[in-house]
Length: 252
Image 1 (tube, helix red, strand yellow):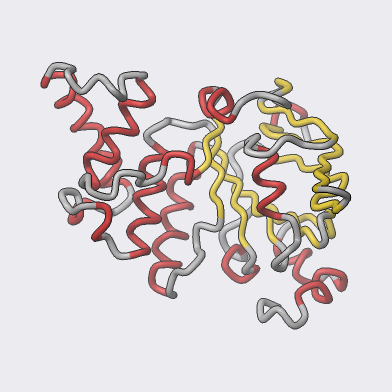
Image 2: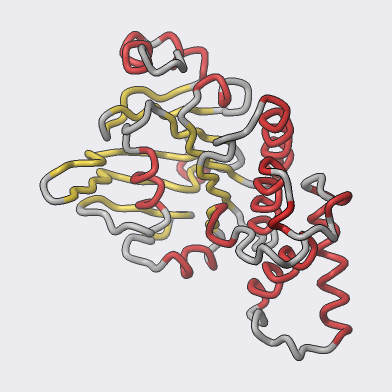
């Protein structure tokens, strides 16, 4: 694996909470232009690991680098500016704005003009055109003028992805994008993730192995805060330790 292909790397990532080790000595290497899933049964430390990678939590020990640059200790906002954005970071936080307006606000944030509501109509119209492109890209054209609060749950997830795409990240981190979705929505969001991953890298946290089976190039399985296995689905799903970790969780 050539070094230049690694976009995100964690070495010896550890997080302790008052004596409880939630994440222990995790090494993770995400290859550029792949979909990488971080999975594991509930309580495996996936979300903690995810929060460490985006610095919503500070690691007790370990080092994180993005594009070969040490980002350990950087703020979540600085990391997002570097091109590493996570889905909820800028999700539909304006429930009473329309889908289009939510995406436009995300575009304004990227340009650093989020609170300049006195910007000329011309600037906003230009952003509108891009916003509608992103709305179309995530299959929400029919919902463009609907308030975010009124969207069906699965469509809200698509809006979150659109607002993240507005930041034009080189790498997207998706936190359980399938959580709470029905079968139809899961298929739709899976197809959407596959589309947005065409020219960027995606790291997603998920607990349901069957959901990531077709989607991911590489799967890292966590259990009790440690890496249990890593590799393509075919290999990982047959690993006896992984099978054992999933027994009784309903996702075997």
